[in-house]
Amino acid sequence: MNVLEKIDTHPFYVEPFHVDFTGRIFMGILGNHLLNAAGNHSQKRGWGIGALNENHYTWVLSRLSIEMEEMPRQYEHAQVKTWVESVMKLFTNRNFAILRPDGTPYGYARSVWAMIDMETRKPCDLLSLYNGDILNYVVSPEENVCPIAGHGRFRFKDAQLVRTIDTYYSDVDINGHINSIKYIEHIMDLFPRERFEKQSIHRFEIAYKAESYMGDRLNFYVQPVDENETDVEVKKNESEVVCQAKICFR
Image (cartoon, rainbow, N blue to C red; front, side, top):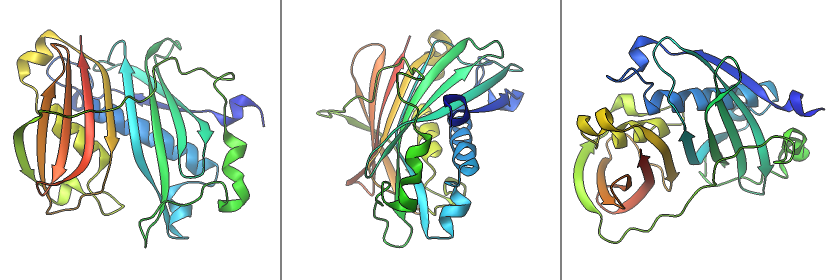
């Protein structure tokens, strides 16, 4: 199998109801396109949710870092290219390129995924499942470059509680927990309108630490790093950390 056969392209169109008041695509909508591209890529190779669910497995997103030079705008056509960069025992690294129709980049993204047993909620050994078939789809960094930095680390010392929300029906996905994109949407809602009027998002990182479920109360703690960078920690029911994020404006 050559490199091009291991890479998929997911085209999309920026609908008017998918953009914010500046005319640029919402970060959550962009995140959905990345996840759709990942799902389609996996499905074509026998590693999609449908096939896995029959054996009581499913994919869960562990880390996502998106770095954009420019966000796609209303009525623009774009495409997401995605490929698997590496596979370890418990995690796989998947990359994305967000491109214009002429192939020039809007930006790139990196992600880390785990496969869990749906009954035990424990990670599975990716190298032993299906005789290690997933290794057949790896595209090394030498074969296809993702030029953005890897995932960073979070250190919280004096984060301040700024918002508490309840979770409802529309927050829950097919896996029965709060959808990973919903956290992104709730985090972006922490910033005032004036921030988006003056600046655009350059980089967004999120690390998922634990699952939360409908009825859980989410507490959002904010820790400014500098005038352009803010860290956010989300806890459920006032104690357990469910995700941590970094937002870099410019």
